[in-house]
Image (cartoon, rainbow, N blue to C red; front, side):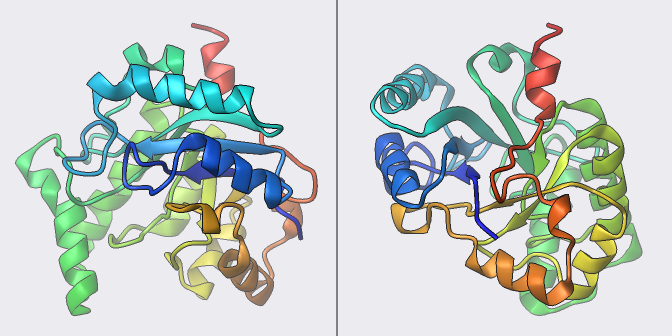
Length: 256
């Protein structure tokens, strides 16, 4: 199994350590032919791309693209801000971006005060190893599902990392709307049993490094180990062995 492209990487404009060009150089060395620079979304208090920095960020990414042999895509790892599925990446932002990822994070500007339980409530229970309530699982699942239904998401990132949702129901929604489910090679987020159940839905996957430093660009070791252990069919993964995913956001933009 060989990674073709890495669609989840960060630079120092969010919480990464390197520039877009340095990420691209690392992608070249890893034998990739495509990479996305995907900063955390605008509503992240400390680690997100700032709107006032967007023009400079775009210039950095475009300059890297002109000086690299790998194709570089402009991306955003948007924050899901509440049960409603509201994300911090809006149609006004779409023109300047190529890839639209989304996930649940903690230190963000939530849609409503009650929505803080999705991030903070999940994080606290994970940290203290407290079993989540049925209501929390239901609401977190709704947040993911509504985000997929209401936004042209290319992929859901690190599903259930520091939060609790019904992974199978989220996977079914991804399958039905053409949104990929990320298998993160940075951090375990689904158990083996969960990944097996998710794969059985027929959802399509992409493997991403979620790299915050150049040493991890194109790294798929953790993900590959779990995929092989669980027996996920490799033909359900669309960014390995020369394959490229068909992204929903790009198709959506054709009709704007």
